[in-house]
Structure formats: structure tokens, C-alpha cells
Image (tube, rainbow, N blue to C red; front, side, top):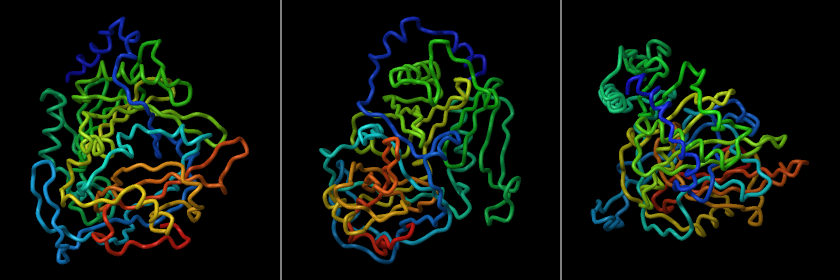
Length: 405
């Protein structure tokens, strides 16, 4: 897309659009994220640095249980055992969410307890490495193809960021292209080696939105947020390029009770498994600056770097809850799981961080932490993860031992 085309899109405002925003398909829930675009996220976290852990396939050891047929396609009869090992590749903060009630922490996840899956796919993360650079990633050719698909092949000179320019001595070839970037005057489009697209407007100064569009982290209501996402999608849809766009907004709180909102778009078509994968891997994030302007659009495409290992049998929510109560979980919470009565919410998601060698489904339990209740009535809900894959396909999963996992 040409820079002038982007500017022209800003001028073609449908006067009836805001009035009809409620007709646009929306989920019933809102999304609550852990890490946001700006430093306000630090208010939510008691930061602790830990070693990331990941599941990696142990190819020599096999399980001989047949998987059967999924979606009309027969997969192999043997699945690699997933061996739990530690990696020091990533540091995490304490994953906790502040809210007055758990009902405020709905997040747009398409999964619900009525969904019954016999198996779910597990992927190898080909963008994982020890230094946080997506190597080998999707490759330079695929990065250029992605840029051309967004711009229609019309762009000026491309800047190449190579590992040797910023991080020599990592063990990754210095000439490896970590990202490419093209300038369009009012915005730059960056393609990262993990498949992510970042569109930045006017060097983070942002692009003006109409006066009746509220786009802030702290002063925008839920209704206004949906209108804002709808407006941006309408005028920048050629960048986002979704077929079935679903808009998701959420809020959480700082310790002093200030609301923080975020803005996301997903491609939800009604196919249960694909929608769950899109939720975990293909989130589109919209970010304002401090003046309420459109600062950037981030389009995640993590599965472009992934290789499917197979479809693994999974356990039920109740089986996962039993494992949680027995201590079979992964967490960054500095407290032992306080007991069954404090379990506030369960959901099925994929852990898709760069520190995970294997991307597999988990049940995430949000648990109220009585030790961290605030005087102003805010409750802190910590995240505890239980693998959704049947235990016989996993080796080396440690029980929580009173320290950070």
C-alpha cells in the first residue's frame, strides 16, 4: 500500500459507521493481557527472573497408541514423547491479574467447557533459540513475500537488520536477517523473522484519528473501545487482512485501581480448533500513544515459524484441576496454590512464548491469591498452568517445589 493510499483511507469516513458499530460481530467477553505495549504493565507484576521451561520431543522414545483420524486425515500411529527440560532463554515476570471480581477478566478466548476434543495439535517452535532472536525463523524470502503481500509490491528501499549489526557473538550468523523494514512516509512496515508484522505510524508519534474516536489505555469505555477497533479495522483492513474479524477489548487494573484497556482483533470463523489456534498465535494488537493517536498495529503470525509434530490426546478440565490440586503445574506465582476454593477460572490456551521449544495446549487456571488482596478491594489472580496433553506422552514434568517454576 502506498503512503498516499493510507492517508486517503483516513479521509473516507462513513458518517453512519459509528452509529452502526453495534451491528459488527463482537464476542461476549473481553480480553485481558499480561504484558501490554507500554510500561503501565509493570504495575501489575512483582518481577522475578526465572529459567523458562519447554517441552521438546525425544524422538527415539515412542508411544505406540494409535491416534486415529482427525478431520478426515489419518495421522501416524506413533507420537514422540514430549520431554520436559529447562532452558535459561527467557525471563518472565509474575503473571498476575488485578480485578475486583473474576468476571472482569474475560479475555475473548473462544474456548469454553462445552468443547470436547479428543486430540489437539502440538507444534515445534522453529523460532526458538537461546538469545531471543527468531532464528532460523521464516527466512528472508518469506519476509519479503509477506511485505509485498501487504504493500502490493509497491515500496521504496528496504532496510535490512542483520544480527551482526546488534548482537555479534551469539552463535547466529552475523549476516542473518532478523527483520526488514520499508518506509511509507506516514508509517513504516517491519517484517520480523518470526513472521510478525509491525506497522508504526510517524515514528511512534502516531496518526490522528477523528475527534469522536476515543483510543486510550485509561479513559476509554468498553463501548467506545469497540467503536475504535471497528473504525481502525474499517480504515486499515487492507493491512490486517482478515476474513472473519472479531473485535476484543478488555480492562484490568493497576494497584491503585486505575483501569487499563487493550484493543485486539482475531480471525474467528467458527471452526473451534482453528479459532483456539488463532487466539493463541495470531493476535492482532492495536496501540495508542499518550495523545490518543494510532501508534502501531502489531500482527502476530507465530505459526508461520512452527512445524506440526502431531495431534496429541488431551485430558479434561476436571482431570487438569485434579493435577493442579496435586501440585502438577507450572507457575510464576510466588505462592503455593492456596486450595480448591480459590480456583476462580479455567481456560484452554497454548503457551506460545519464544522460550517454549514446543507449543502445546495447557489449561490455565486463574487462582485468587489471598496473600495479595488489596485494601481497596482489588483481588490478585495468579496463573497456574497444567499441560492438557495426556501425562503418558510427557516425561520430566516437575511438581511445584515451593519456588518459582
